[in-house]
Length: 384
Image (tube, rainbow, N blue to C red; front, side):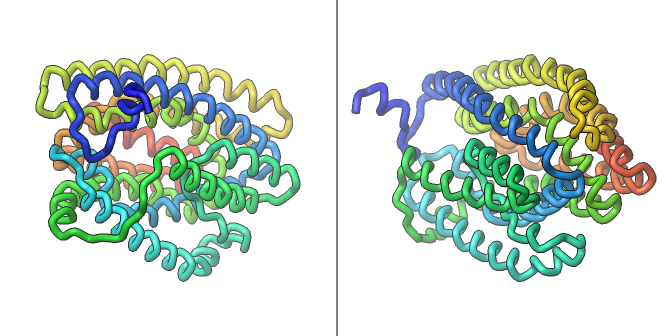
């Protein structure tokens, strides 16, 4: 293995110089954004086809079940992964093994809960049996998109998502171990766990608040406005959030560890934050405007998309959230990276309370339009 290749695959337990962090941050943002742009283009193409093959109610089911699983998956980490990244000292094998062991225990517990309560969830939302087996995991957008479109074309309905997610999970697991092999080992070190939880638990509390604000509210909306209108809202959210998924998600993956490594160098940190906010907004803002212009044109142009015409107004309102998120996500990312979790917690509580006040009230009166307006009003507080 040559020197350059060795440098590009750093041992997670090794110390990393600040210069290396800066170089890899730039390369990481460019590489991740470029790669994800290609993959997400495929995903969007698949989503466009699914929009013509599936009904608004089926997309509502998709939103409900995704929210349920996201809500449960929150508990599979308790912030240990973020604590590994934010940790100032060198990460050792005990840290990695302890994190792995705790996460496996939590995941097995969650899977048990999902299967135990699946019938109750089905009855509460009046879902059909095919919805229960949709257990979304992570990774492999390409496989997921191809499988989902093919099965929807063959008339599998919501089951298309079920099978596509399972295939994506298997492919993602194997590909991860091929490209980044690590021998799993079950160990719990009290010393490592204690240190990691000091950051992990406050970080996870923030994550829980975010999950409660978004996925928790989706579960409530499914009951307030019904599965069909929720499908309209989910469709609008998916399209208007494209710039965030393509740009912001990938920038955040790089900047959080980079900011953490720079937390003792204020000047470098200041420059890094400024550049990351600029890079994000200069891409997200024009892309959001483009979607606002193109969405009504495409929806009116394609006959099978007429069912999505009611999504135009919610999408317009939700664009406000996207514009704010392009800036605030990097700033809260910075606060988390330097250990200022309490400030982030205060902001998250404020956003959650406002969202839970505005969205249900307006949704009850105006349906999907009201829910979108509630989200927009809650995010206005971002000026603080």
